[in-house]
Length: 268
Image 1 (cartoon, rainbow, N blue to C red):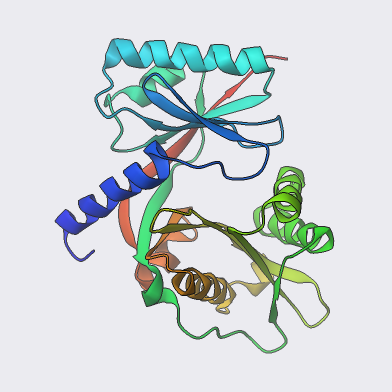
Image 2: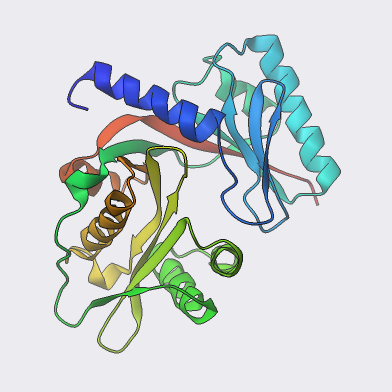
C-alpha cells in the first residue's frame, strides 16, 4: 500500500468484502440487504445500522433509503440506529441528507489499514504489566472497566456484547487486556476476524491516562496482529480516533479515508 493506486484497490476490497458482503458481528444479529443498503439488525443492546450503500446511489434514492431506515428503526423500537458513512460514499451530500432527516453525526474517525504480518512483532510491555486474554464474564467486566477508565464512557453495552460473544460465538473473536502488578486493567482491545475475507478489525483499544506513552497500546496491536497473521488474515483495519491514528500511522498503517457515525435516536 505504498501508492495511492494500491490504497484505492485496498479500499475497494475492504468495501466489497467487509461492507457490501458484511457478516453479523455477533450472535443474535443478522445482516440484511434491503434495496441499495446493507444493514445489521439485532436487539436494543446490539449494534444496529447501515454498513454499506450502493456507490451508484443518487439523491432521490438516498432520501428514500434514509426514510426506509428510520421507519425500520421505529418499527423495531430500537433506541438508536446508525448509518456508518465513509468519506468516499455517494452521493457526495449524503451526510447533509442524513442530518436533514434527523441523524446526528458523531466524531469522525480515520479508516486505516496495514498488513497484519508487518505489525506482528515482539510484544514489549513495561515492568509489572502483563497481557491477559478475556475468555469469560469476569474478564469481560475487567475489560469494560478498562474501557470506562480509558474513554470516560459507560461500558455497559460493551460488557453485554463481549459476554454474549464469548458465550455464543467466540471462534472469530479475540479480546485481550493489559493488567498492572495488582491485577488492575490498564488497557484493553478486541479483534473481529471476518471469515472468507482477508481482513481483521481492531476495535476498542484504549489505555488509562496514567499508563499512556509506555508502549502498552502498541503491544496490544502487535499481539492481535500476530494472531490475525497466524490465522491467515492479510490486513488489519482500524477506525481510529484522533488519539490513536498518529500512533497507528507510525506503526505502518495507511489512511484510506474517514468514517463518521450518523446516529438516529427516537424521541422519548
